[in-house]
Image (tube, rainbow, N blue to C red; front, side, top):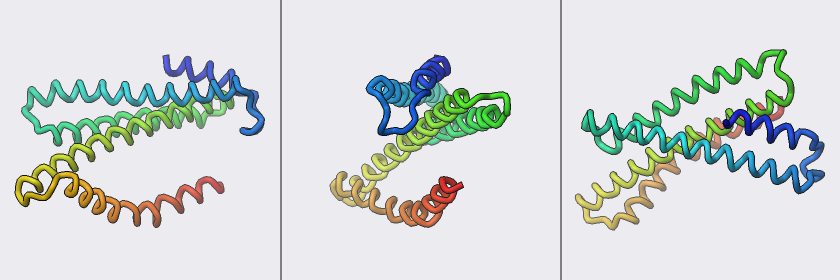
Length: 173
């Protein structure tokens, strides 16, 4: 269903030349496409969570372990699908419209990966702040703030030094 929607939306919005020249109809289809991608990502995330919850109860996993396993499963599944779609997009027989649809579908899988890991990190921060509160008596929102600051101190330099230059380099190519 997602693929049919993507082809239909891309076909409707295919005639746009510049972003500022788009008509209201084309903006609507672009917005509908973005909302569809996010709905797909959220639906797949919750389908995965339900599946992992069944296994979690059977295997007696903790909530945090189940979230990490779910995020790993989603990441592996999406990597396989993205790899397959990328190979299809690289074929000469696919046209520009199909390549755009594949690109939008790949982006929705990227959102799914991000949502799954965000969910796992959120649960880890909540669980850790609860344990800090229980042990030291530090108020849970303050513990969450300290953990968020620690995560930013680790992630922001890596983002700035490696991810941003890579994105700029790929955009220039």
